[in-house]
Image (cartoon, rainbow, N blue to C red; front, side, top):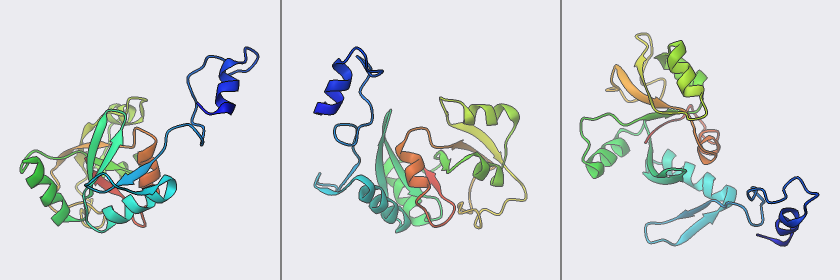
Length: 175
């Protein structure tokens, strides 16, 4: 903890007295981007911007979240999706598709009240939803062979909305 956070933590009159550490810019969690050899390429906001550029360029990016690492590609880059499928030895089983928000999911999927409740819950699980028959896969940034039912999610930890909001076009990522 930095000196400021330590003082708040140890002061019984402070609302943060013996509270979990906060997201202080000095000592709180940090974002960084590494290459495959572990060298730091960028930190903080620039790390998010660079990761987005890699995704937009058709690269596979590993994103550390609350439950470990997720491998991400943009769905509109079929070659990147194919590379990820080969690496994961997952030719047939669908990857989960992450949309930037629930409105984007509704744009291409038929979302029931129950599915909407799950996608909006604090847990934000991956939910199997049906593709709308009038949804054009290519215009939504989805691959042409997107299955009728697919595992779908919305951002569930802080780094993902930052990445989703950084795209120039409607983002959909496979995890």
